[in-house]
Amino acid sequence: MNLDLDRLQAYPFERLAALLAGIRPKNEDAVINLSIGEPRHQPPAFVTEELITHLHGLSQYPTTRGGAALREAITRWLCRRYGLPPQTLDPDRHVLPVNGTREALFAFAQSAIDRSRRPLVLMPNPFYQIYEGAALLAGAEPGFIATTAANGWAPDIDSVTRSQWERCQLLYICSPGNPTGAVMDIAMLRRLIELAERHDFIIASDECYSELYDDEAAPPVGLLQAAAAMGNAEYRRCLVFHSLSKRSSLPGLRSGFVAGDARLIEPFFRYRTYHGCSMPLHTQAASAAAWKDEVHVRDNRALYRAKFDAVLEILRPALEVERPAGGFYLWPRTPIDDTGFARELFARENVKVVPGSYLSRSVDGKDPGKDHVRIALVPSLDVCIDAAQRIRRVCEQF
Image (cartoon, rainbow, N blue to C red; front, side):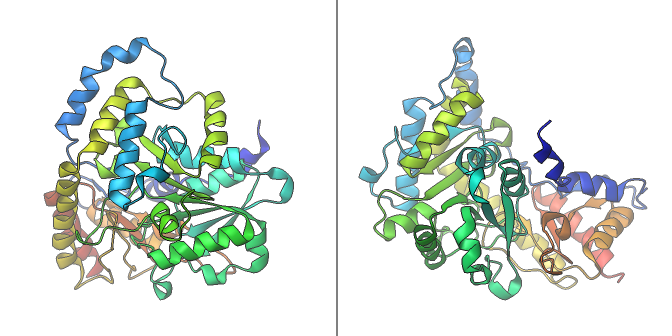
């Protein structure tokens, strides 16, 4: 077996299951699971119909690069959403459909890391655990950049040493962030691109929450947008990872894309050719339809906005919590330690949340996830209100 498998840590939900094992909740109401970031809004009907209409494609092998219609729909969406010059994005060279961002974020590290040079892969802390697993199985050392309230929940890039930048081969970023919801501004993205140029590393920007944001007039800036603003029309060292899971409430479709530097897309395409993970034709047709429509995405944002309004009104008198700029998570500070709070919340009120320390790593004795929990506002408005009332009742007992 691959010995690097022994380096993987237990996934947060495995740890949560162990934490809650054997507890019989005092509240006999139905369990409310706010631990998993699985969108539960109704999928767009027109996407479902497109999927059904193209099931005849099951008789054909799909290609790794995906069909021209999907790549062109993605390219047009990128240019429209981020104001990119159309002539800078070639659907044949700069875009690659993938089966969701999770698969692609993991796989890209396997194709990009040079094991012979003591590689370091940097990532925000707390973080999406796929980044760490991807680094370990690619033979690299994970490096963690704290995201704390003191830094506006953005990665504290000033804490990274010169020697760490020199060893870095790949930097994962996430904006809006998971779990904090923080959005990186264009100045920070430009600075990271400058660092990548200076120290010869790649930036993998996880933008799967990019279409879930609070201010309709101020959508989050993207990495390619920042590169274009710098005159980096080739998007050197920049790759973005997007998904329909959050944007369109289609987590089961397993559809996304990678876009950016053509010099990075081509070897990744070659890797994926051997990996055998091409997107089925009916999924491609449904995905193209989803990328062409913004009405359902605006409606989706409105649903989350209503949930934040209602839940924050209930929680703010009892819990230290902020409204995030993007995403669908709350990241409150807990009145007791985060694992104890998660246990008490389940035991007393049958509500599941993820302890923040399960999403982070301790570095030099400091754990930026400690004494926080991640709350995913993915159920219906009524269920989220019920959950908020239960959480408040628990908080008022401390």
